[in-house]
Length: 93
Image (cartoon, rainbow, N blue to C red; front, top):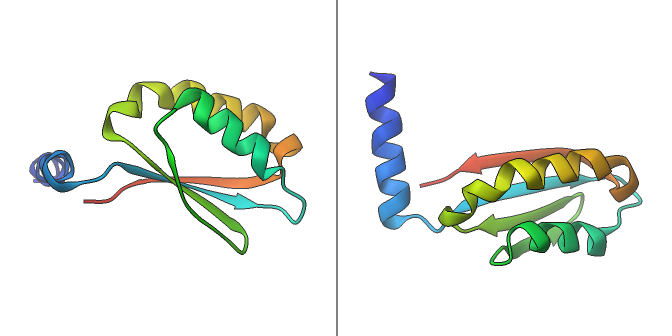
């Protein structure tokens, strides 16, 4: 049952979706420009959705998923220097 739901969600995502969302929760002191440079280095077509309060949100194209492991590793490695508290990644149909 769960497998068919995942298949349906992925089908809807590929058919109607706009990509993946990555939300970073920022510390009080955050190097937003360096975060964006790292992100665009790995996913050139990423789009900044919002920079409000403690959150920085990006939309990533569906075809960018192969770049995610290196992107996430880079962000994780640099998170203290960048001022990133938390990364949230989600699929949204």
